[in-house]
Image (tube, rainbow, N blue to C red; front, side):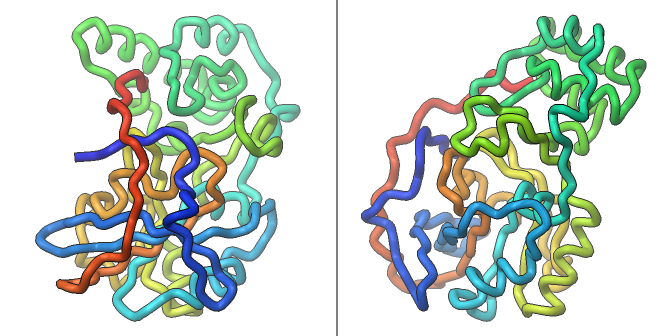
Length: 270
């Protein structure tokens, strides 16, 4: 069962440092009879065009131990790939303005009620598919079923992140970040060049999507990997912890951890 929190999760009581790298204990999670401790690895604000392997070498390699699994936030990888769209590049049309008025408002991120995000989806998928998805989504909501819109348009639209005027980072006010290119290859490169077992994820307080994983994790199901971070330990605020190091600690005692106060599970996604 997932647990949701509000605000920055980098509590001072959970802060640790090793070899100049700051990380935060994110608590214990039991999955399939194993006890996993998670650590949120703090980085600088990663800009477009940076080398994700160098970023991982700087921040993750000093902490990594054989057997660990590292989850890579999709936004950071896409920023490194410069797979982004500026708001100024999106020409807002009638349908995006009109349909966005009827989209479900999402308190846990930017949904299709943001006209520029909806216009970008139209640009990516074409107006006919978007209209069909909107219609089916509306019918689904009448019968209490949500998420149909994104089931129809696909993960590449669901993964659009940005155009968020309330973000703590000004860059994201007018920038949309798309899904990473070749997520499997990203994980293969990280494993081959750095020896880090990794999973590329699109995670938030509502859902966790596994976009890619390194070859050594092929025997792990996506559901199991998602359960390791179901409570979204990377956070949704300005934590700057896009990499979560997951460690099977067996029967060893867990590190002292001061949890945040949980809030009710969100239910207002599309």
